[in-house]
Image 1 (spheres, rainbow, N blue to C red):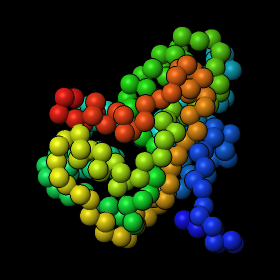
Image 2 (cartoon, rainbow, N blue to C red):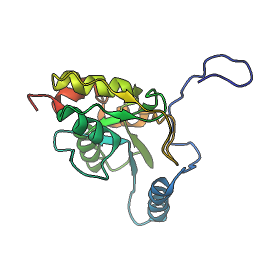
Image 3 (cartoon, helix red, strand yellow):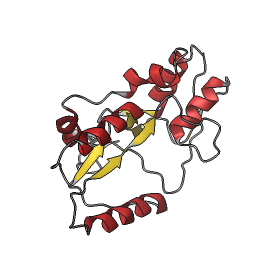
Image 4 (cartoon, rainbow, N blue to C red):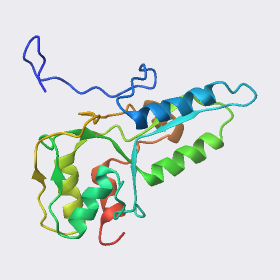
Length: 188
């Protein structure tokens, strides 16, 4: 993406927990409404964990409502070329299910924690890169097919800031390129 004003390449910045919520579609709006319900709790300590797109070994690949990563893995596992909208360079931030579990356990073990925590990797991965990583993990030759077009309500890029998660876990969350074999590989 380029800046409309100067023509330079735009930098994709991670979304911080303090960013003003601005859901683009019904699913995002429903998640934000749930947050608003819990913010009113005063009798106990509450932390809102904002899960990025979660993946892992038990992800359902045959679900018609599957996330894009499950659909890609499902296509590749059957030898079908993944079909990607736009140019395939949309950025996503996938979080390994083990980091989600670790975040929940770490938060439950503390009496104090941030009010909102992004549970994400903070590592940008394009859809094309995800296709290549999954194909490598499954030892398949299945390059994606970029079909153009777009999905109404879909965002171009989604990247979270994992700073609060790093502090909670005391380590870096797993990048998609490192977790893909555990999730989709032949040894998974």
